[in-house]
Length: 253
Ligand SMILES: Cc1cc2nc3c(=O)[nH]c(=O)nc-3n(C[C@H](O)[C@H](O)[C@H](O)COP(=O)(O)OP(=O)(O)OC[C@H]3O[C@@H](n4cnc5c(N)ncnc54)[C@H](O)[C@@H]3O)c2cc1C
Image (cartoon, rainbow, N blue to C red; front, side, top):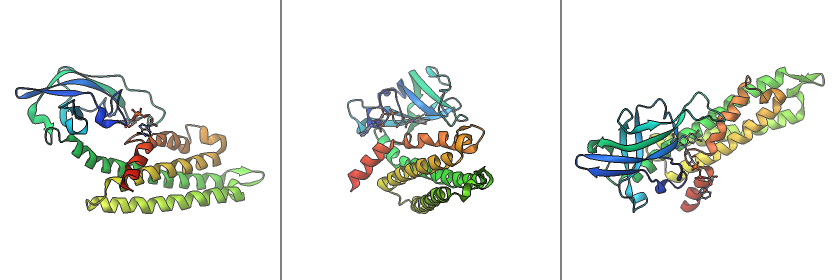
Protein backbone atom coordinates (compact mmCIF):
# COMPACT_ATOMS: atom_id res chain seq x y z
CA UNK A 1 0.00 0.00 0.00
CA UNK A 2 2.24 2.74 1.31
CA UNK A 3 4.22 4.98 -1.03
CA UNK A 4 6.70 7.79 -0.35
CA UNK A 5 4.04 10.40 -1.17
CA UNK A 6 0.92 8.62 0.16
CA UNK A 7 0.55 6.76 3.42
CA UNK A 8 -2.57 7.93 5.22
CA UNK A 9 -4.05 9.09 1.92
CA UNK A 10 -4.20 5.55 0.58
CA UNK A 11 -6.42 6.44 -2.36
CA UNK A 12 -3.63 8.77 -3.53
CA UNK A 13 -1.28 5.92 -4.56
CA UNK A 14 0.62 6.64 -7.76
CA UNK A 15 1.90 3.18 -8.74
CA UNK A 16 0.22 2.41 -12.05
CA UNK A 17 -0.74 -0.79 -13.85
CA UNK A 18 -1.44 -0.28 -17.55
CA UNK A 19 -3.07 -2.98 -19.66
CA UNK A 20 -0.96 -4.28 -22.58
CA UNK A 21 -2.58 -7.28 -24.33
CA UNK A 22 -2.71 -10.18 -21.88
CA UNK A 23 -0.44 -8.34 -19.40
CA UNK A 24 -0.27 -5.26 -17.22
CA UNK A 25 2.85 -3.08 -17.03
CA UNK A 26 3.56 -1.81 -13.50
CA UNK A 27 5.54 1.34 -12.62
CA UNK A 28 6.02 3.02 -9.25
CA UNK A 29 7.43 2.45 -5.79
CA UNK A 30 6.39 1.46 -2.26
CA UNK A 31 7.91 2.23 1.14
CA UNK A 32 7.90 0.73 4.67
CA UNK A 33 6.86 -2.69 3.40
CA UNK A 34 6.97 -5.36 6.11
CA UNK A 35 8.64 -8.56 4.81
CA UNK A 36 9.63 -6.66 1.66
CA UNK A 37 13.12 -8.22 1.86
CA UNK A 38 12.05 -11.86 2.28
CA UNK A 39 8.73 -11.79 0.39
CA UNK A 40 8.66 -13.62 -2.92
CA UNK A 41 5.00 -12.93 -3.69
CA UNK A 42 3.42 -9.61 -2.78
CA UNK A 43 -0.05 -8.11 -2.85
CA UNK A 44 0.39 -4.79 -4.63
CA UNK A 45 -1.94 -1.78 -4.62
CA UNK A 46 -1.98 0.00 -7.98
CA UNK A 47 -4.04 2.46 -9.96
CA UNK A 48 -5.54 1.03 -13.13
CA UNK A 49 -7.40 4.31 -13.59
CA UNK A 50 -5.18 7.08 -12.20
CA UNK A 51 -7.78 9.77 -12.85
CA UNK A 52 -10.02 8.24 -10.16
CA UNK A 53 -9.11 7.90 -6.52
CA UNK A 54 -10.49 4.86 -4.65
CA UNK A 55 -12.51 3.77 -7.68
CA UNK A 56 -9.35 3.41 -9.80
CA UNK A 57 -7.55 0.99 -7.44
CA UNK A 58 -6.72 -2.60 -8.45
CA UNK A 59 -4.69 -5.25 -6.63
CA UNK A 60 -2.11 -7.60 -8.11
CA UNK A 61 -0.21 -10.63 -6.87
CA UNK A 62 3.34 -9.89 -8.00
CA UNK A 63 6.13 -12.46 -8.25
CA UNK A 64 9.23 -10.62 -7.00
CA UNK A 65 11.58 -12.53 -9.34
CA UNK A 66 10.12 -10.70 -12.37
CA UNK A 67 12.40 -8.35 -14.37
CA UNK A 68 12.08 -4.69 -13.35
CA UNK A 69 11.34 -5.48 -9.68
CA UNK A 70 13.89 -4.19 -7.17
CA UNK A 71 14.02 -3.87 -3.38
CA UNK A 72 16.07 -1.57 -1.11
CA UNK A 73 18.27 -2.47 1.84
CA UNK A 74 16.52 -3.42 5.09
CA UNK A 75 15.41 -0.11 6.66
CA UNK A 76 16.73 0.58 10.20
CA UNK A 77 13.87 0.85 12.66
CA UNK A 78 13.40 1.99 16.26
CA UNK A 79 11.96 -1.40 17.24
CA UNK A 80 10.80 -4.73 15.75
CA UNK A 81 14.36 -5.31 14.64
CA UNK A 82 13.86 -8.99 13.75
CA UNK A 83 11.24 -8.06 11.16
CA UNK A 84 12.38 -6.65 7.82
CA UNK A 85 11.04 -3.47 6.25
CA UNK A 86 11.88 -2.37 2.71
CA UNK A 87 11.32 0.00 -0.16
CA UNK A 88 10.14 -1.68 -3.36
CA UNK A 89 10.62 -0.38 -6.91
CA UNK A 90 8.70 -1.35 -10.05
CA UNK A 91 10.24 -0.40 -13.37
CA UNK A 92 8.08 -1.66 -16.27
CA UNK A 93 7.30 -4.92 -14.44
CA UNK A 94 5.17 -7.04 -16.81
CA UNK A 95 2.65 -9.25 -14.97
CA UNK A 96 0.04 -11.56 -16.52
CA UNK A 97 -3.50 -10.11 -16.49
CA UNK A 98 -4.53 -13.23 -14.56
CA UNK A 99 -2.44 -12.06 -11.57
CA UNK A 100 -5.02 -9.38 -10.77
CA UNK A 101 -6.56 -10.08 -7.35
CA UNK A 102 -10.32 -9.53 -7.53
CA UNK A 103 -11.87 -7.28 -10.14
CA UNK A 104 -10.41 -4.39 -12.10
CA UNK A 105 -10.97 -1.16 -10.11
CA UNK A 106 -12.36 -3.35 -7.30
CA UNK A 107 -9.25 -3.20 -5.08
CA UNK A 108 -10.57 -0.61 -2.65
CA UNK A 109 -13.42 -2.82 -1.51
CA UNK A 110 -11.00 -5.70 -0.82
CA UNK A 111 -8.64 -3.40 1.08
CA UNK A 112 -11.40 -2.02 3.28
CA UNK A 113 -12.56 -5.49 4.29
CA UNK A 114 -9.03 -6.85 4.91
CA UNK A 115 -7.98 -3.79 6.91
CA UNK A 116 -10.61 -4.76 9.50
CA UNK A 117 -8.58 -7.91 10.15
CA UNK A 118 -5.24 -6.08 10.15
CA UNK A 119 -6.51 -3.59 12.74
CA UNK A 120 -7.91 -6.39 14.90
CA UNK A 121 -4.51 -8.08 14.77
CA UNK A 122 -2.87 -4.90 16.04
CA UNK A 123 -5.38 -4.81 18.91
CA UNK A 124 -4.61 -8.45 19.79
CA UNK A 125 -0.91 -7.67 19.80
CA UNK A 126 -1.40 -4.55 21.95
CA UNK A 127 -3.61 -6.40 24.46
CA UNK A 128 -1.19 -9.31 24.79
CA UNK A 129 1.76 -6.94 25.12
CA UNK A 130 -0.02 -5.21 28.04
CA UNK A 131 -0.56 -8.55 29.77
CA UNK A 132 3.08 -9.58 29.29
CA UNK A 133 4.35 -6.17 30.45
CA UNK A 134 2.21 -6.28 33.57
CA UNK A 135 3.38 -9.79 34.45
CA UNK A 136 7.07 -8.88 33.95
CA UNK A 137 6.69 -5.69 35.97
CA UNK A 138 4.93 -7.31 38.95
CA UNK A 139 7.74 -9.89 39.05
CA UNK A 140 10.39 -7.17 38.85
CA UNK A 141 9.01 -4.84 41.54
CA UNK A 142 8.45 -7.71 43.99
CA UNK A 143 12.12 -8.60 43.65
CA UNK A 144 13.70 -5.12 43.43
CA UNK A 145 14.52 -3.38 46.74
CA UNK A 146 14.68 0.37 47.50
CA UNK A 147 14.82 2.08 50.91
CA UNK A 148 14.99 -1.38 52.50
CA UNK A 149 11.72 -2.66 51.05
CA UNK A 150 10.42 -4.20 47.85
CA UNK A 151 9.47 -1.59 45.24
CA UNK A 152 6.08 -3.34 45.13
CA UNK A 153 5.43 -2.24 48.73
CA UNK A 154 5.33 1.47 47.88
CA UNK A 155 1.73 2.58 47.60
CA UNK A 156 2.54 4.41 44.37
CA UNK A 157 3.72 1.16 42.77
CA UNK A 158 0.55 -0.70 43.72
CA UNK A 159 -1.63 2.20 42.53
CA UNK A 160 0.21 2.37 39.19
CA UNK A 161 -0.07 -1.39 38.74
CA UNK A 162 -3.73 -1.37 39.77
CA UNK A 163 -4.46 1.17 37.02
CA UNK A 164 -2.47 -0.86 34.50
CA UNK A 165 -4.22 -4.10 35.48
CA UNK A 166 -7.66 -2.49 35.17
CA UNK A 167 -6.92 -1.00 31.73
CA UNK A 168 -5.40 -4.28 30.58
CA UNK A 169 -8.45 -6.27 31.62
CA UNK A 170 -10.88 -3.84 29.97
CA UNK A 171 -8.76 -3.97 26.82
CA UNK A 172 -8.76 -7.78 26.80
CA UNK A 173 -12.57 -7.86 27.05
CA UNK A 174 -13.04 -5.40 24.17
CA UNK A 175 -10.45 -7.22 22.03
CA UNK A 176 -12.06 -10.62 22.70
CA UNK A 177 -15.41 -9.17 21.64
CA UNK A 178 -13.86 -7.92 18.38
CA UNK A 179 -12.31 -11.34 17.71
CA UNK A 180 -15.70 -12.93 18.33
CA UNK A 181 -17.44 -10.52 15.91
CA UNK A 182 -14.67 -10.95 13.33
CA UNK A 183 -14.87 -14.74 13.36
CA UNK A 184 -18.61 -14.39 12.65
CA UNK A 185 -17.88 -11.92 9.82
CA UNK A 186 -19.70 -9.16 11.72
CA UNK A 187 -16.90 -6.79 12.73
CA UNK A 188 -17.46 -3.45 11.01
CA UNK A 189 -14.88 -0.89 9.93
CA UNK A 190 -15.48 1.63 12.71
CA UNK A 191 -15.50 -0.92 15.55
CA UNK A 192 -12.19 -2.33 14.23
CA UNK A 193 -10.89 1.25 14.13
CA UNK A 194 -12.01 1.72 17.77
CA UNK A 195 -10.18 -1.48 18.74
CA UNK A 196 -6.99 -0.33 17.02
CA UNK A 197 -7.21 3.18 18.49
CA UNK A 198 -8.12 2.20 22.03
CA UNK A 199 -5.77 -0.77 22.32
CA UNK A 200 -2.70 1.09 21.12
CA UNK A 201 -3.32 4.12 23.33
CA UNK A 202 -3.89 1.92 26.39
CA UNK A 203 -0.82 -0.10 25.43
CA UNK A 204 1.38 3.02 25.45
CA UNK A 205 0.02 4.13 28.85
CA UNK A 206 0.61 0.67 30.34
CA UNK A 207 4.05 0.18 28.82
CA UNK A 208 5.22 3.62 29.86
CA UNK A 209 4.10 3.07 33.48
CA UNK A 210 5.68 -0.41 33.54
CA UNK A 211 8.95 0.86 32.10
CA UNK A 212 9.05 3.64 34.72
CA UNK A 213 8.65 1.08 37.53
CA UNK A 214 11.78 -0.68 36.24
CA UNK A 215 13.87 2.47 36.82
CA UNK A 216 17.09 2.60 34.78
CA UNK A 217 16.89 -1.09 33.99
CA UNK A 218 13.71 -0.33 32.04
CA UNK A 219 15.77 1.59 29.53
CA UNK A 220 18.19 -1.30 28.99
CA UNK A 221 17.72 -3.54 25.96
CA UNK A 222 18.38 -6.70 28.01
CA UNK A 223 15.14 -6.12 29.95
CA UNK A 224 12.05 -7.28 28.00
CA UNK A 225 10.12 -4.14 28.97
CA UNK A 226 12.51 -1.94 26.93
CA UNK A 227 11.95 -4.05 23.84
CA UNK A 228 8.18 -4.17 24.36
CA UNK A 229 8.09 -0.36 24.60
CA UNK A 230 10.18 0.12 21.45
CA UNK A 231 8.37 -2.58 19.46
CA UNK A 232 4.91 -1.33 20.38
CA UNK A 233 5.36 2.32 19.43
CA UNK A 234 4.64 1.64 15.77
CA UNK A 235 1.17 0.32 16.61
CA UNK A 236 -0.18 3.89 16.71
CA UNK A 237 1.30 4.50 13.26
CA UNK A 238 0.80 1.48 11.01
CA UNK A 239 -2.40 -0.22 9.84
CA UNK A 240 -3.65 3.37 9.50
CA UNK A 241 -2.54 6.00 12.02
CA UNK A 242 -4.63 6.65 15.11
CA UNK A 243 -5.61 10.02 13.66
CA UNK A 244 -7.09 8.18 10.67
CA UNK A 245 -8.86 5.79 13.10
CA UNK A 246 -10.48 8.82 14.74
CA UNK A 247 -11.59 10.01 11.28
CA UNK A 248 -13.19 6.63 10.52
CA UNK A 249 -14.95 6.46 13.90
CA UNK A 250 -16.05 10.10 13.68
CA UNK A 251 -17.65 9.54 10.27
CA UNK A 252 -19.78 6.70 11.66
CA UNK A 253 -21.19 8.70 14.58
C1 LIG B 1 7.52 -0.48 10.80
C2 LIG B 1 6.49 -0.15 9.76
C3 LIG B 1 5.94 -1.17 8.99
C4 LIG B 1 5.01 -0.88 8.01
N1 LIG B 1 4.52 -1.89 7.22
C5 LIG B 1 3.75 -1.59 6.17
C6 LIG B 1 3.37 -2.59 5.22
O1 LIG B 1 3.71 -3.78 5.35
N2 LIG B 1 2.61 -2.23 4.16
C7 LIG B 1 2.21 -0.95 3.97
O2 LIG B 1 1.53 -0.69 2.99
N3 LIG B 1 2.56 0.03 4.84
C8 LIG B 1 3.32 -0.25 5.92
N4 LIG B 1 3.69 0.74 6.79
C9 LIG B 1 3.30 2.11 6.50
C10 LIG B 1 2.26 2.69 7.45
O3 LIG B 1 1.01 2.09 7.24
C11 LIG B 1 2.25 4.22 7.21
O4 LIG B 1 3.49 4.72 7.71
C12 LIG B 1 1.07 4.90 7.88
O5 LIG B 1 -0.15 4.57 7.26
C13 LIG B 1 1.21 6.43 7.88
O6 LIG B 1 1.51 6.92 6.61
P1 LIG B 1 2.74 7.94 6.43
O7 LIG B 1 3.94 7.34 7.07
O8 LIG B 1 2.82 8.32 5.00
O9 LIG B 1 2.34 9.21 7.28
P2 LIG B 1 1.53 10.49 6.78
O10 LIG B 1 0.32 10.05 6.04
O11 LIG B 1 2.48 11.41 6.10
O12 LIG B 1 1.07 11.13 8.15
C14 LIG B 1 1.87 12.04 8.93
C15 LIG B 1 1.03 12.52 10.10
O13 LIG B 1 -0.12 13.23 9.61
C16 LIG B 1 -1.29 12.69 10.16
N5 LIG B 1 -2.40 12.78 9.21
C17 LIG B 1 -2.41 12.37 7.91
N6 LIG B 1 -3.63 12.57 7.38
C18 LIG B 1 -4.42 13.08 8.37
C19 LIG B 1 -5.78 13.46 8.46
N7 LIG B 1 -6.61 13.34 7.43
N8 LIG B 1 -6.23 13.96 9.63
C20 LIG B 1 -5.41 14.08 10.70
N9 LIG B 1 -4.11 13.71 10.68
C21 LIG B 1 -3.62 13.21 9.54
C22 LIG B 1 -0.95 11.22 10.43
O14 LIG B 1 -1.84 10.65 11.36
C23 LIG B 1 0.47 11.37 10.94
O15 LIG B 1 0.47 11.70 12.30
C24 LIG B 1 4.60 0.46 7.81
C25 LIG B 1 5.13 1.49 8.60
C26 LIG B 1 6.07 1.20 9.56
C27 LIG B 1 6.64 2.33 10.37
